[in-house]
Image 1: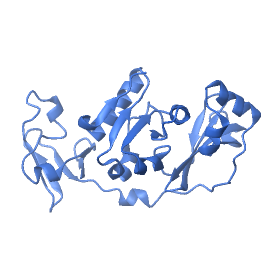
Image 2: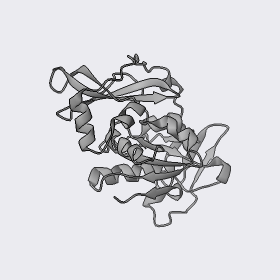
Image 3: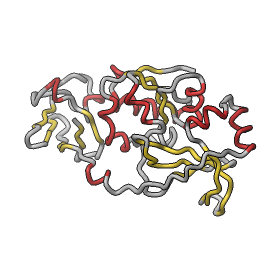
Image 4: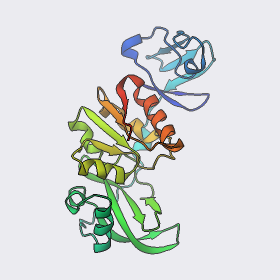
Length: 244
């Protein structure tokens, strides 16, 4: 189950099945202690309240019911055409038109706030259970935006249900590259490596139960930070690192 610290507002996963309501290592302070396995924390599943006797932090059960119902749904235009320039741009990066059609990537004109005008963009639609949930827009200047007030989810998240091994990358282009190479079991974070707040994962953490997670991020500071946060959320024992 998931709990939230009333001290730092950090969200943690705890295994009630493993420990029950007995003492266990504190999710908040154990990583900073010399005795990392010291069992100073306990959680009452009935009262939905926990407490650490070492750092004095209080915890409550984390719920996302309020968050989930407020998202808007973008309208699917059923648009699949790509400009010649877009096709050539992808081909230079080793991604064929067949892969783009498979992933429903298309060209459009969109207002981009970074340049304060409409411009040609490449559109990466995000689907959940086959339903359009969000769209990432990218212009030729590498400006990005998502649909305002739409839900953040992993790109290509529907592949998680049908695979026991999942590759996680930091962008749609990386995801398309893996799919081009035959790895359809690849998903991407929606907001790049610079955003290590994975709150959007909370709504769908159960999809990843008993999955092996392969993390493929860039070998830079932001990539390492994202990798570390993914490992923290999924658990070190389930994660493997891909070195490119």
